[in-house]
Amino acid sequence: MSERRRHSLESVTANAFTTVADDRSSSASRLADAVDAWWRPAAFLLALVVLWWLVTAAGWVKPYLVPTPWSVVVEFQKDAGLLARHSGITLLETVVGFVVAAVVGLVCAVAIVYSRGVERTLYPLLLAAQVVPKIAIAPLFVVWLGFGIAPKILVAVLIAFFPVVISGVAGLRAVDPELLDLAATMGAKPWDSFAKIRFPGAMPHIFAGLKVAVTLAVVGAVVGEFVGANSGLGYIVMSSNGNLNTPQLFAALICMSAIGIVLFVLLEIAERFAVPWRAAREERDILITS
Image (cartoon, rainbow, N blue to C red; front, side, top):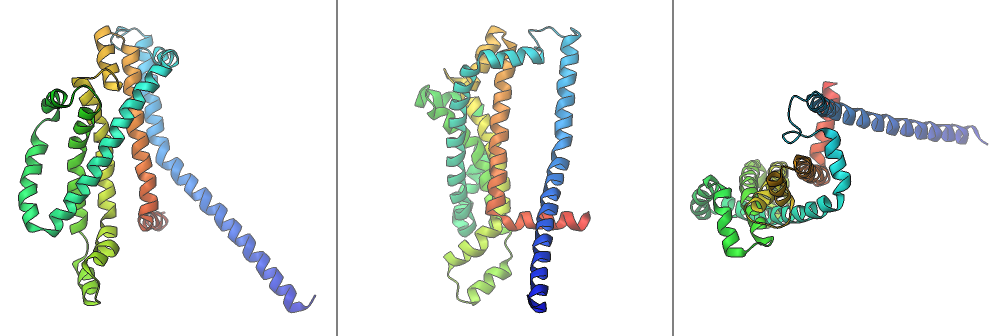
């Protein structure tokens, strides 16, 4: 083997080991960041559970007011099928309501940004509709649409709609106008400017609104179930409250929280893929500050 070839092989091997080391270092860094981000809320949640157990074990509150953590665990084991079935119904109402609110809200946001007349027409109506308590008009939806899932979806849409519109308008208007002027100068059509500059630039604002909206959609679906339903987690809560079955009530509340958290996390993951430059910027900021 010649001297030059031997040096080339050693260089390639060294680069390979360096790449592997960098990948391991990056993975370890991401794992450390994840641990640093989650250990505090996990510790706080554990402290709350311990406090809950101490209060109930000491008998400071009656079991029919606040059940023990173990009784809630037993309730999950006993009524797992029941809770899963009603959680699925609430999840369906939430997801459908959120998707409808997101699509319609983003369309309205684009219309408001691009049309002064639409803004003057829709904006006051949106504000007026937001002020009206949704629980006050939910019985009307039950009267109009019956006791199926339609009124619950409609309540979820109305509650989740406003954050999507507001964040969409704010994001679409936050784009640097000089970029739009530069694109127009270079001959870009309005659709090209929207698809390649304005909408991608608004994505962080839009996802912020979507993450708020998805949690509100859970609230809307449950509020609709409170008013009139024979299925869903809201129905379980009302039924458990009437029967003083607080373990089942707490189990249903935990299921509601789990639905909201899972949907929020899924949107966080989707944002990582849809807005990769933001994740890269956050990692860069972490490296600079560390």
